[in-house]
Image (tube, rainbow, N blue to C red; front, side, top):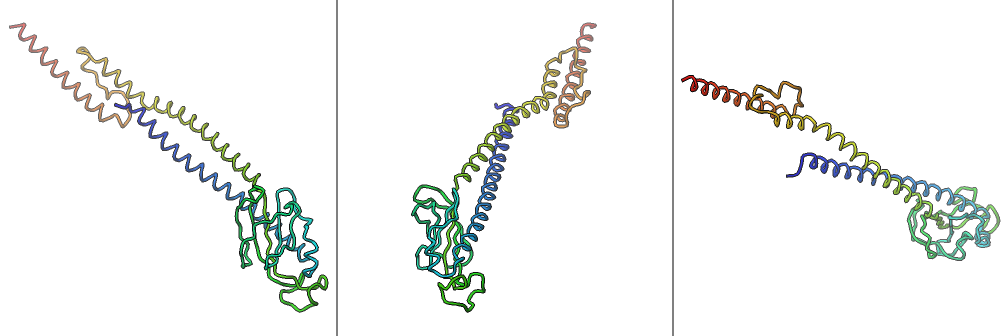
Length: 263
């Protein structure tokens, strides 16, 4: 039969392992979500810069002349299209490649994770901007398109992307840290559990030794005379009752033997 120590240890370790696994997954997913939200916020900031630059000169001719954007750093990409699919501007680090151009008609930003043709995994932010005068109110009257800074700007679709290499490295570090912490916690738990069980089962071992030391000359001993844990009180009570019956039986036998010898 499996020992009490082993059964308690098994159940506690399995329960703690499941709790730690659930907690670790929650921490990992929450950390990834927070980092991804930060990347999305940075993409929106880059999108505002791209929008400002692409509309800064007014008419379509100006924007198409500036297809090579001065914006962009290592790990960030952007591209601006007209609604009919013509490229108005792109970051130089795309090296002639195109970012994915999703079909979208809303003016709320959408986000997605994808892999470029170069194999770079990126986080995309896409947003469509309606027509309006740069620096003026949307739909206002002004000089015709191409007439300088006061001209009407075309509706445009802006896509910005950020390399997820650093995000993946951070995620791996978090996962590794949780794994190492889990190993330390597991080792500490096993050690503390061993100490707790040894201390908790000590009264049971002491009671076993006390029962083993009982002989015919010590039937008047009672195990309840010493403080015992509450869980062991029923066992001690029944043992004391058994000792009382044994003592009475042995006393009756001694009197019978003495009377028989006297006769």
